[in-house]
Image 1 (cartoon, rainbow, N blue to C red):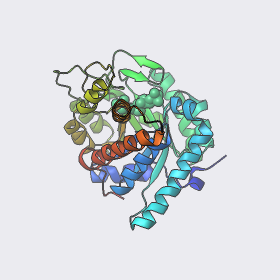
Image 2 (tube, rainbow, N blue to C red):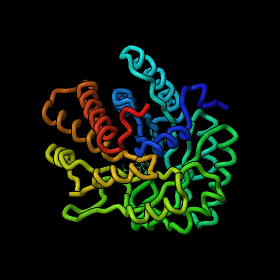
Image 3 (cartoon, rainbow, N blue to C red):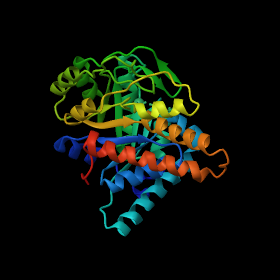
Image 4 (cartoon, protein in one colour):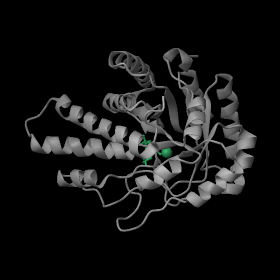
Length: 325
Ligand code: G3H
Ligand code: 13P
Ligand code: ZN
């Protein structure tokens, strides 16, 4: 058993309590490699924002769970040293399992230094979702690890599970679910979706802030999570396509709507696809423009810098988490 506390992580309890009172959301950014992780940590330290580092099942398979744990630990050490050097406050960092599919994967993460896990029972029946979430919560709380559950189904692709249609969370279910499971936060479906292809250009995407308000009435002060919250920056879709890519036109969740949601009980906002787009766009451009480049630092470095700028801007202008440590 490796406690997250010995690695320097925190769970999400205090982060969410502060976010609720301060009317902002804590960023939850996914990482799979060193450059993404450095960009997240550098941006969050520079903007003095708490952060949740998310690792998906796919990330565990890609980078190896042991490697990821040491990378996470290394990022805490790097953050502390940089904070000292720059005269900044240290930032709280949570290490979180994104879309945990069953009890076993959640347990393995808890036993290996994660401070927070998501048990995603949203594809199960309501009763099965309650049962598996409760089981994960009971184990997690023994080790002071916090748990995110999910009610409702988002459309889009999560790991290898894809769902063509979304089912909004039913406000009438949330109180019962929270009471029966004792979960610490709840991911809901109100019109966001996973992946790069969210909405067709020319449509007017609207997240259902009315359903969110209904949910808040049922469970006042309870931390809500929004998945699938990338905004799909159009300049990077264009950049990917200009430099040899072939992405279909698509738009994402308008940032003003995320800002609105962050002022409410939404305490955690998940963003992955925006970073993927930016990294791909920058790398494509450099490789097309400089046909002689063979040093990965020459394209991964600028991609990391562009990612960092995006995360810092999200913290400042969208989630409102900057300056909250
Ligand atoms: O919700 C899905 C995240 O974007 C993680 O994606 O499972 O391909 O790593 P992934
Ligand atoms: P995006 O695909 O919109 O970035 O959502 C990421 C996410 O929800 C990770 O859990
Ligand atoms: Zn998600």
